[in-house]
Image (cartoon, rainbow, N blue to C red; front, side, top):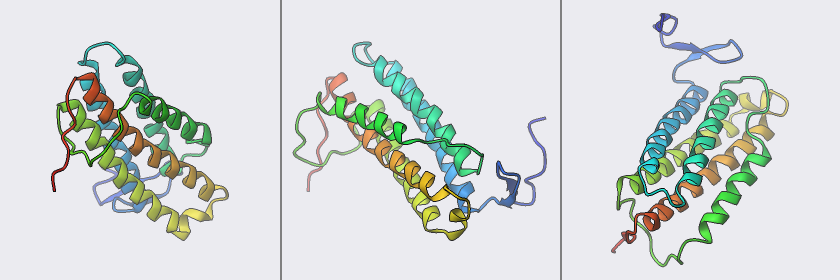
Length: 188
């Protein structure tokens, strides 16, 4: 059965077995990670519709991101293990550096528009920023630090999420090039 009725009173279980309110900051954070994963699924579908040159690498990167977001959700729900690592941060930095070599200099703020893929990448960017804010709140919460090593893991996860928003931004710019569009610049 898909429904268990265990959450009918506004509580849910974390991976460590603890029951908490559905308004708990950890639930909010991993729920946002799940929401972001769905947004990346939509972005991935849109990328798959673009002309094939240079797109597959980004489709593959987004697939990696989606798996890492599940890892992040596991970590945020107190599943034991090391879910987001320093290597993950370095990997996404390499993606950003590679994409940036293909982009023209930016001279103005860019509006999140131009095509569905561009807009979807920006939606991913903004939901990622929300997730980052939620995770920073968790890092400031003393209960998160009760578990040995949790603070270090959380800081690594925050760095990864921070880079993920940067990746979304440069990917949106790359989609502009792939679709032979001009960036829509902010006009004061």
